[in-house]
Amino acid sequence: MNYRTLGKTGLRVSEIGFGGEWLERHEEAESVELLKYAHEKGINIVDCWMPDPKSRDIIGQAMEGCREDWYVQGHIGSTYQNGQYVRTRDMKHVRPAFEDLLNRLRTDYIDLGMLHYIDTREEWDTVMNGPFLEYVHELLESGTIRHIGLSTHNPVIGQLAVETGFIEMILFSINPAFDMRPPTENVEVLLAGGYEDESLSGIDPERLRFYQVCEEAGVGLTVMKGYYGGNLLDADRSPFGVAFTPAQLIHYSLTRPGVASILVGYDTKQQIDEAVAYETATDAEKDYASVIAGAPLHSYSGMCTYCGHCKPCPAGIDIAMVNKFYDLATAQPTVPQSVREHYLALEHKASECIGCKGCEGRCPFGVEVAERMKQAAEVFGC
Image (cartoon, rainbow, N blue to C red; front, side, top):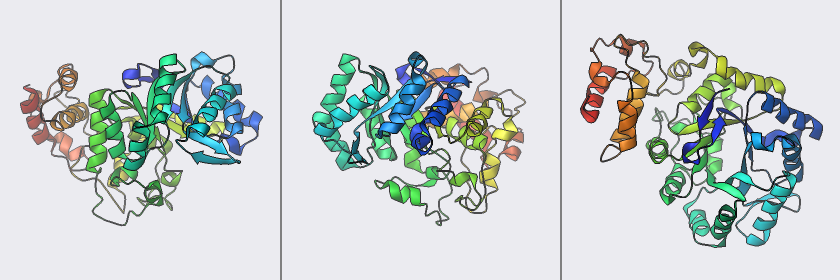
């Protein structure tokens, strides 16, 4: 298992994580065993947005004796009322629900205290200007939560979170289909699809901007809905009209700027094995770009997705990384110093491009690589 630093939290999390949403669908002992199996495979981050007692008890049992091996995303504002999940900012429900989370997880701290599920500007304003946020800061100051995070499906809300300066990481929905969708305050619209518009031929600018500002600000991303609820694994349900593999979808998420871990939902040990197999997959097995480019319904065009098809470069340039740093640099009025330093640390710079354009013939999306190398050299000065 490979590990990445989750932004400025400094936590080293497994690239492949555990989304706990499906735990309650199985017998308790079976789900406990599933989490323990994930632990054996090197997975060390789990998301618990679920308020139901069964899911929380399962995670608590699975972590017993190895709590220090896990990083928990525990959600604040996800409550269980009359046997139903209710998202709320009402403190008479929020406090007991969080205390129940600690109790059932058999722990006295949560690594990542998540502002649960904020998708609208109205709810953002409510959270930012009331007792809910005061409570979150109380938890941080007491050490009950170690870091403040947030979960959202809306890149506009995500950018507001980055601007606060105190939200250190974000759980965000990422997959190739969602990336084509403009921001929405209604997640049901996002989940419903509606990809008939042929103009959706690349990453939505707001989502791209969101990834970039996270990278620039050191706000780490963890990924939910990476498989689009399984839709992208099935050609009949995929909005692209073709099926992806787990390795391809995992690679897509992990190549977005700022992303540290993709949290996958599992029903079986085999599904864990399929996800973890990403770590030993070949470049060909990880290749999502060819799938998108060959899809009958949609494709990206002229936009670098950092897929690495351009390799090898006779000058030794890591073209995908140069393109990523160039995109990050040009998203700002001036080049962020952190981006410049990352670029200067590359062994070979854009100025070394010999203009052979061999890479352009291999690019699935028709990116004019030689021209971008010229532009990158001008931006960075080498």
